[in-house]
Structure formats: C-alpha cells, structure tokens
Image (cartoon, rainbow, N blue to C red; front, side, top):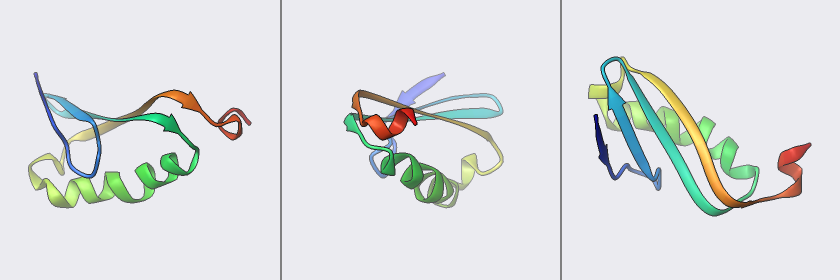
Length: 72
C-alpha cells in the first residue's frame, strides 16, 4: 500500500489490490464540495489515471469545520 499526492486537490490516495481510497481534506468543508467531489473529481480521476479505471473507488471527506447545512 502506498500514499501519494493526488490530482485536483484530492489530498491523498491509498490503493491496495482491487480498490482505491481517495480522501478530500479541507480546513472548512461546505456541502458544495461534496457535489464537486462526486460529480467532477471522481469521474475525472478515472479518466486522468486509466490504470485505476477498473478499481473500486472509496471516497471520503475530512475537515476541521463543516457548515450547518451538512447536518440536514
């Protein structure tokens, strides 16, 4: 298992066998970033890195502060 810098501000990736984890880390994490991650960054990742195109992708978000709208 390795850890490297990932594109498009995905903070890091972990890959092992048939899966890969992509984690988006921000100090402040508004809800709009979740949509951006799901609708743009994850699909772009498969195109930019075809060696991972057949892998199962697990994604996560991490932040020090989340907007109240994230809890609704």
